[in-house]
Length: 106
Ligand SMILES: [Zn+2]
Image (cartoon, rainbow, N blue to C red; front, side, top):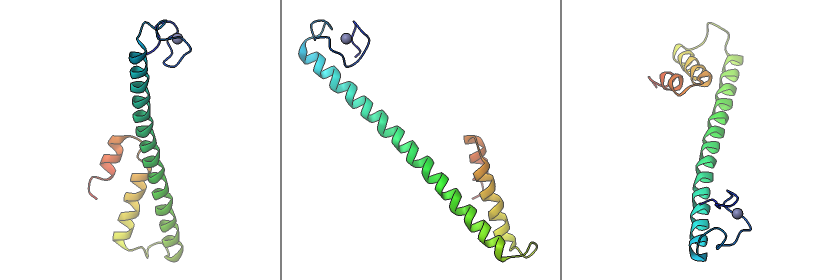
């Protein structure tokens, strides 16, 4: 609960100035702290997920580059070629919809 005097959650106003009992103020601060922590945990999860996807794409790119280096064009195995195309589509997907389409027949 933000302070009614200054609008901040944590401030130097006393419980009386905030119109709360000390117990209420502490409870509210604790609640806000927990909410903030939950929000940060979620943000952290999203960052990890995003980093994992990016790292996976780098690995796929390296596999593709290595495979292409060792095979002349026209010598690509048909299934491998299809998987390459799929990886490219997944990589270039920018919206959730494009991503879903890209992984549709995995
Ligand atoms: Zn205040």
